[in-house]
Length: 177
Image 1: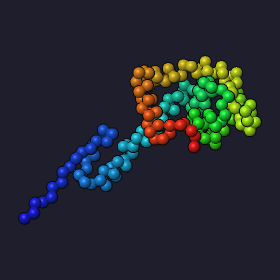
Image 2 (image 1 turned 30 degrees about the vertical axis):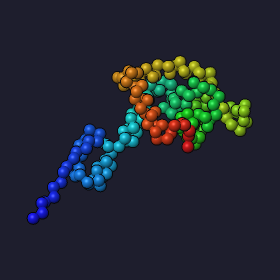
Image 3 (image 1 turned 180 degrees about the vertical axis):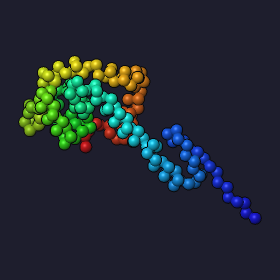
Image 4 (image 1 turned 90 degrees about the vertical axis):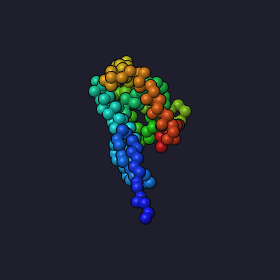
């Protein structure tokens, strides 16, 4: 008489959640991996939303949104960039940047001038008000660290891991699509 088949069970751990899977049952494992709480993309997306939310009260006195703050960070570092260059640094396309830059110009923070190299292109410069805002914004990174209850020693490796993962995914040139 043939022996009855026994099924061995294994318990892989995904995101600290036990999933019991019958060996050889790849379909069950695949379906289990489709749970939202198991998705790295959702964890990163949720974290990004939470970080932006944490910035809101810090940026409110400056009357800046988070994307506007990112533009200002780049321009405080280097003026005279084209919209294309700015987009490459931020990973944003011109369709996203153009209205954002118009709002910053309306707030008298950014001036879009014709480029000296190419009359068709626009170069981005800070207005005196935009330059002065840098001093007001200087405390924001430290305030965010305090709000998170973390120090730089914990955040630097995390940032490096994020950058490495981004590079591995093929976005290593920071070019906007």
